[in-house]
Length: 482
Ligand code: SIN
Image 1 (cartoon, rainbow, N blue to C red):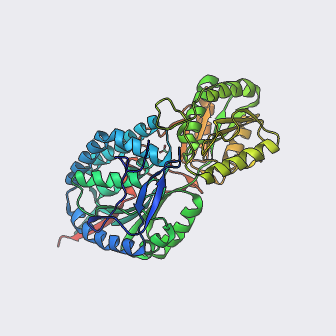
Image 2 (tube, protein in one colour):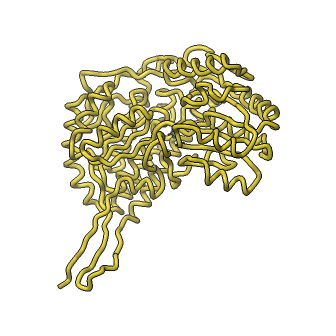
Image 3 (tube, rainbow, N blue to C red):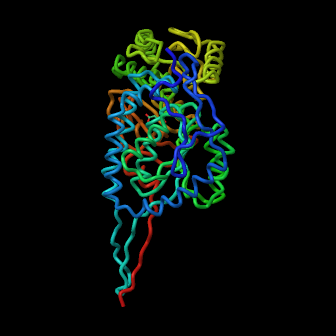
């Protein structure tokens, strides 16, 4: 099977009103086999400048379309995403190796945001305020912030785009999007469907680029670009946040995570272990909200680890294009190297692998459970982004909370307990943007939920009404009535 020129692939950039095949290209490879999928147009700083000029023109027209009219186009986009479900799922699996059963679910997830914001568009409005002066009337209006620069990751090539683009477009903003180098084709496919749905030219421009820093510079310097939205590493987020400060752009940053999963002795151990597996091994662990460290109350550590080991051993590692596969390859060699280093470090500090523990071949890392992990191991501090579940123990609730909160990150945390009082105490005291109590997948399939973190996990929220507010600015209008 040759994957080059597979009918689902896309290679031309979309900006300034047209599709561009550029002289400079970069290769996109399927991580399952490292075969080439095609050479994608590689945009540079001049292309970014053209995109800003085009976005400025498009914004004038798009903000004038009624919110209801914008919602209608979003509704059609949602319909097209679902109609192209199989092709989009295949393309995502080819680009970044997520198992096909999961990428089908991701198309539904991505379309869910589009549908939710299609409906939300028509609810935009303002408020009438009581004025302190009898001769004045006061009100607020919600206005689109303007041109948005979005930088999206490869781990959810469609979902992380629509979670940003749908509220931005519904609000009346226009977007310039730089997709991850590993998954630009999915982004181009989404732009194609947006235009087919009736999205006006240049309201959603997609410019793949291999030199992110050079491409991004003109966008960050330009005062006309009013908002940055980024999902990716904390290191890059910090850099972009600094650059955004120069022109006081609004910023939403969805950065790294290091989710703790607490299992108390009173928990349903079978269910808790199944949810660790679901949270840890989906997308081969390459999810910001994936469980990164498992803390189990000492008296149930042995039975819990046995269940977790059994469930993990039952996962099929293999070709992500097959329906029978649970865990696919990692996206690139650097991920494999990092995971290997973390596992070696944990083993050297006394941990043992109860299942898995190493590389199979190519970019495939075996689904792994590590028991007796020393709390100061690298894997208990550094984001893993891979299929390894390190387990360690705690004694008391206070100790569990202290361990869970001792992190620079604050994206998602999970806890399993049947004690109602404890459940509330944990929900209150876990220092995270998302807390799942007896729920290892709190944001799955939930376009209406606020997604985002605290501390070094970022600022702002995506999803629900909070996601829309990120793209709106409040104007105060005071009117003298004589
Ligand atoms: C992420 O990894 O940032 C996205 C996870 C999700 O939406 O469930």
